[in-house]
Length: 325
Ligand code: FDA
Image (cartoon, rainbow, N blue to C red; front, side, top):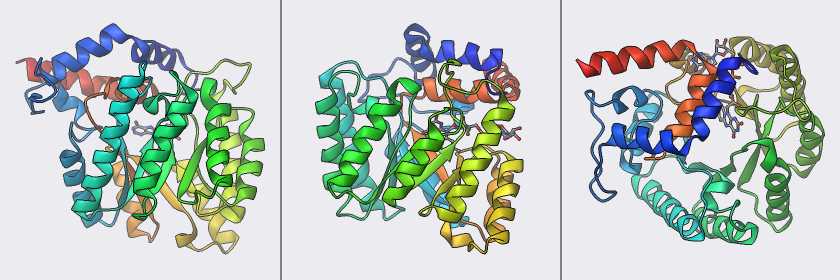
């Protein structure tokens, strides 16, 4: 449950650099980047595999082909965040350019998600914007849609600021994310929606203080419902990103009652979560896009998912025990 002790605990783990290094080494073997150990059912990464299809863009493209064959679409996310040197930010940018080229070559859906701290936002604001521009210069003419993920509240203002600047400068194939747990988000929604931009609505994956965010799940859900209704009737191809059956039912009912066709918005879910719901929605005629994360830097993403759904901790532990046999 949002705001619970388990969420706080997994967020602490997610931020631990030592644990991250250790987990990545154990899961991937101690291989060098040029010779990474492959994920297999007998490695701890076997359990990570349920949420992250692999280390390479080729792994992600294989997973994307399966999704597309089942009537789903995807957005590719090369995992990585909180880069601390300019050299690392440049390397992440080059990696993203490689991903864009690989997607073009593979002929799969041209849609990516990225984080500004992955492109160096913590190191130097201007360099992060330059890096994002480099990605857009390759991706936009090739018809990509580029979603800027939203990180913790420390980055909300600067992320929206960069997004709005790029929008004013003419970028139109970009979108942003708003988190219903933040008090400010309903105001942000009004402003960004007035631009005509595409918004992904989420509840928020980060542990936030009560000075900026609702602490009770009921309040986060109520804000989500309010924002979702505005987006469905007045948004610009919004993404309703949730696995919450109650929110999904509400979105479907609201759209039907207001005569909004099912191709005017899309549902989004994370890879490996509630596949039953994903398939059911596609079979009912809705558009569903799967957030497809891949790469070596899976640890913080994986920990956030465990914090949201502690029931999965049992799944992970069972996997580790059986793999240890
Ligand atoms: P919530 O956690 O409120 O749970 C409600 C119900 O959903 C549960 O009772 C259960 O039925 C179901 N459910 C939820 N998680 C489940 C799981 N792991 N397994 C099984 N059932 C589950 N966040 C952010 O801060 N910035 C971002 O950019 C993004 N981007 C993003 C993209 C996409 C496509 C999605 C789906 C989500 C994000 N998020 C995100 C994460 C988001 O903020 C949120 O943390 C998670 O989606 C969990 O919230 P839900 O609304 O899914 O369900």
